[in-house]
Length: 336
Image (tube, rainbow, N blue to C red; front, side):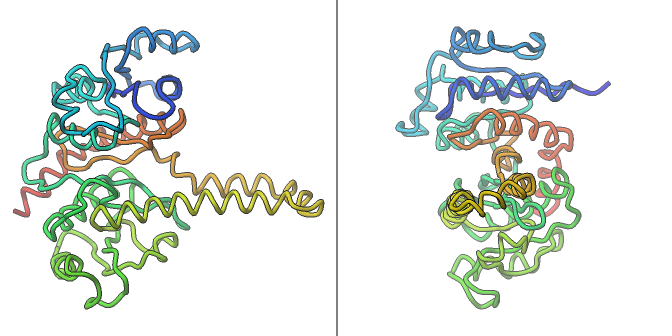
């Protein structure tokens, strides 16, 4: 009999909370039978939201948390002071092994700080990176790091590469994933001091498939499966990727509606365009896991809607079933 995987969800975090978060949780339990969701937040609000749906009442539990951590609060102080916030209560469920994973669309800083302070790092992990999946021309790439460590050292980036490789191989199913470091050129001698110092370390790493540098323009083409960088560069890549994608889709739709002929053409190719746009919809891959913690913590976009929340919850299932935490622990301990 398959084990039921329990995911704690921050019902109060994000621009569209609690409505879209509750809906996403319901969609997840309707989609997969071997999961249970714990919605953490204001009980009366969650009960009211759930009353709109038909679902198996045994598979969604409510844990009350009175406080909410906002984006305007200092993350570490908020985690320490707001012990009864939805983020802190949910993270403690993971720490106490009452939940296998945690999903939140709330304050990124609080999720990152709470993940490290409450759940804790795996022994040997220097800095946990935030690692979202980016859609590309041939599938997806993992961007490591996109927001957790803006002042990373070479040893951190090496660990990012190792953890990213484990994730891509076991969760996404890409055998021997190609690892590249973000650079301003393909030549080994190019780059800033961090890239120049990290490059030879990655090159001499026996347990990753390092292919060298990758320029930003090659990322959408699928030039690598694991894209390694420090968080400042990674966050710029992620935000530009998302913003440009949204702008292009709007521009294409506007162009298709500009004349009678283009409208007829749009009608003829509507289904093909829909499928193409769907391939580049990052929300279908769920949120970004914070790799290297003793429990799984997943950060969804702040403006996440129900579909992304559902996919973030389902993403936790594969991660847990594949024992990613144990595999990261074993990999790093074997290479100390």
